[in-house]
Amino acid sequence: MKQNRGATLSQTDEKDADRPKATDQQDSLSLQLFTKLFINSPIGIYVIQDGRFQLVNPEFQKISGYSEEELLTMSPDQIVHPDDWEMVKTKATKMLKGLESSPYIFRTVHKSGDIRWVIERVCSISYKGQRATLGYFMDTTEHERAKEALRISEEKFTKAFRSSPEWFVITTLEDGFYVDVNDAFLQTTGYNRDEVIGKTSKELGIWVDPRQRDEITRILKKTGVVRNMEVQFRMKSGEIRQVLWSAEVIDYGGEKCLLAVTRDITPLKQAEEERIQREKLQVLLETAGATCHELNQPLQFIYYILDELETKHPGEQLIKDLKEQCDRIKEITRKMDNITAYEAKDYVKGSKIIDFSKACKWPP
Image (cartoon, rainbow, N blue to C red; front, side, top):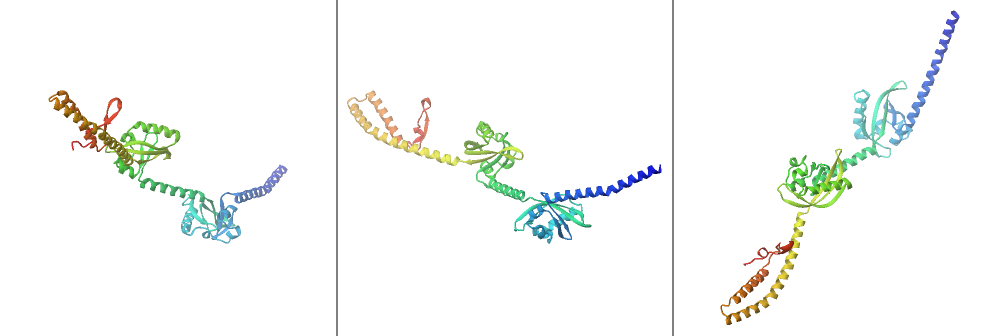
């Protein structure tokens, strides 16, 4: 029994003798793993103790632009942007005390002088038997620049949207609900914002021909864009205005919407119509003048013959009837001489003729 107990104790002693060796191996493996992670990490890692950098990995050196030798002689405030230093100290202190867990973003100054953005977290550790701070951060400069570019772009878009003299509106693609409109739209249509936002274009009756909106929606679903379509819009007052309408499909608030711009061409259309009317009137006046000149000479001769016939055949009804018809022709030529506007009326088979009662000032 003693022999067995001795054997057992001997075996136990042997096991106990093996434990430190196993622990040493584990520690060695842990150190190797930490070293590999520290050196190869895509995240900047550092240790600060007594206000100085004690350890810095290659990624930290890359982000800061300084070599390991330079960083080990520096303090954190030498790489943090001066305007952000107080904020960084406050955030880091709260995180070390366990009062805050969210990483914080700040600016660093690269050795070259370039400003870089980083996101950082810190925690307390023991280093060489003394309290130290372990920190790690990632370079988010490109992300921050993209955010800033997006912010500037959105700001420019908002300014353009609000101040444009053209009508800018954002509506849902499917139903045409107004999501946003600019001041030019409100001023021209006569609506106020509360009357528009949340309503559909069909509810407001904006489109004179709602079928056009349906057709354009089909085109937009297929191509994503339309340009300068001439349509008619109805104002709140009931007035009809001619417009050029362009739209593009965008993602807005997670929904397919239309960004539409409308140019009011009513004055241009009116000016064009007036120009056409002037050209028609000019042609009409020239034609009327020439016609009157050509008719007056034979008409005067016919009057002369009728006077001669009336002298020979006084009271003849046929002569009186002929004179009445000549008077009618004379009246027509007078009207033609007094045409001031191009006015037409419907005639047979869809054709039109000049409406003398509206086209001329007669009697004077």
